[in-house]
Length: 461
Image 1 (cartoon, rainbow, N blue to C red):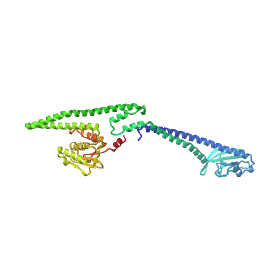
Image 2 (spheres, one colour; image 1 turned 90 degrees about the vertical axis):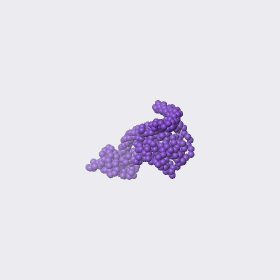
Image 3 (cartoon, helix red, strand yellow; image 1 turned 180 degrees about the horizontal axis):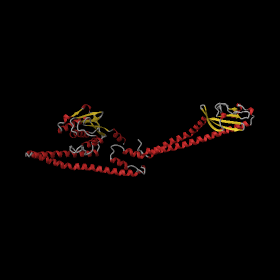
Image 4 (cartoon, helix red, strand yellow; image 1 turned 135 degrees about the vertical axis):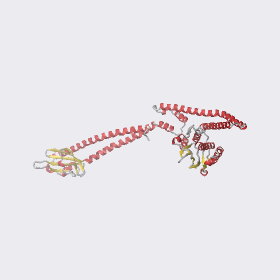
């Protein structure tokens, strides 16, 4: 999701750097703290052993015992922090040494540890001891290693909690600052990412942006994009103006030519001219009719893109569909046998009557002429108007081109590729979506339904 997002890539990079850096610092702190704590506690063991040795040397040996050492250690609890043991070396003892005093809870064989510091295991408990020898006296001070581990964990927790808390604060601040700094780019991206956004709307939005709200690195891109979109919009407007102007200017000459051709047909019939001449006049009249229809569609397409009638109350589909079928029946007498309407399923639709009439007329003519359908089904399903036919099968690539201006499947087909473009433009003006889908096994399914996503965006504006 955030793979190509500059904002989130920057945030993740900074967070990764912070986490790696602080992890290295914490590891360094842990190793250094553990070593210093070990040295400090070893010094405490050594100091304890030396203190006991000095006190023992000041007392007569026959008065030493467990009680004496307990008083010296000021702790007779079995769970004391430091365990001590005092041994006496004498020439009368041939083997080993004689333990004369030790604290309660001290481990066994404490006096057999080597001189100096050592770590050893007794049962499930690990011990750290220090052995001090002065003359005939040996003093051993020992403590449990889990006490050191507990103390180290407590110290690390006191350091780690503020460290983690500050890291979380840094993460929140980084995300907040990046989102705040990228807010203008996010708004720009969200607006331009809208579907069905016209060139004029995009150009107006970019031109209204304040330079102070755009980062300096992005400003050239915005300026160039604005100029490019403005040029595209101007070119499109010129194309629409040319189409409207050409259609309007050609209407009068075509009407005059049509009048002359029809007059020539009438004279030819009266004078019994050869059938070849009358046939050519009929073909000329048919061509004029086709080009007149082309001009009417161009004018209607231009008007639909430049004007938008206010939405009125919903209308019933049935009266308009009956009017369309009646008008098309005069031109296509075989149509009544091909079209099957599920009248009971028809309901209401929120479109102006002239728009609905034009849409239905163009879709049905497209199915009859270009798709060469033998059967056409019209129904309404869950508020969606559906027109199905069993005409020529279209490929997925052909379906993607449906609705484009002047596109035809082949040059041999009649028409000029404006019927579906007009339907798509009219429906788009009133927040309706025109969908195409292949029908199994052959044919095409055309659906007309309200575009809720576009309607919600219009409402937000």
